[in-house]
Image (tube, rainbow, N blue to C red):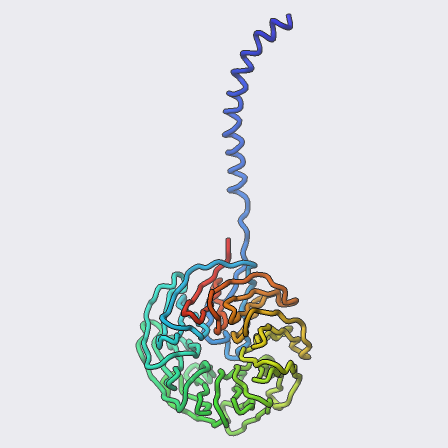
Length: 398
């Protein structure tokens, strides 16, 4: 009887099992695909405000960006100028503006990198632009300050300084009807102009070149000179000047936070100065290579690059050294703090992402050429330029 049943059932099973498998296979993968498509997508935190309209992101030049950076980024697009880009790009209304040593300023789409307009000047640019509403302003190596319409690149006015303009222009807004711009030049003049017309309002003479960009805090402008002095100037009373002798050339731009100015000099000394008194609060003296980088400053950290190839992080309150990170070459580019991370570039061609609390390596991007300019962060993108003329837009890796 058992043999009879096996003879009857076995052919049935041979036929039925493959049919059952054929039915089960698509049902299983249909459910698996449904589970896959309904799984919640990874949520990426936004980073950067809508705009980054100046060299260090704000008049105080603190180099702070909103939000939280992802742990990894990819290239969204790349633009190539005809010569080096040593300036930090600025971003306004979905447009990126960048100057180049090819004597041009470019306006590019922040989404695609497409050229919207360009303007050819008489000499090269190193200074970063400044955007004020519908005006963009930048200085050239032949000492001419240019103002263009942001929409179409139409030249609005020029101002001729007595020496090259290497640092960026900064802004002091007096009222809705009155805005002043401030900048230094290689003739040692620190100049205040009306932003709308380019008309000179006043000038103050330092004793040597002014290489960096001034920081502006409330009604005070602060800048360094190659005469070794940090100058603290009330914008409404430019004759009431305080100075601090740092002991060596100041080529970098200062940052200001809570009435304190932070900057480094040519002999590897880094200072925190009270701008109300002009007195030293704290100093760090590593005494080897120059600080050409401008610092990024928040309530906890001061981060700055140095020509000894290191990125330094100090405690903001007391100057205690918290960590250093060794790059492959001089770190002249100005770093940036965004949330719990630091972005810092080096002449080794890399943009580094570091943990702000520890200095530990998180990620890097290789631009394949030295990077002199600092990064800018706006609208969930990082913009970084290199000395080979490349400008990159980086976005979060999905």
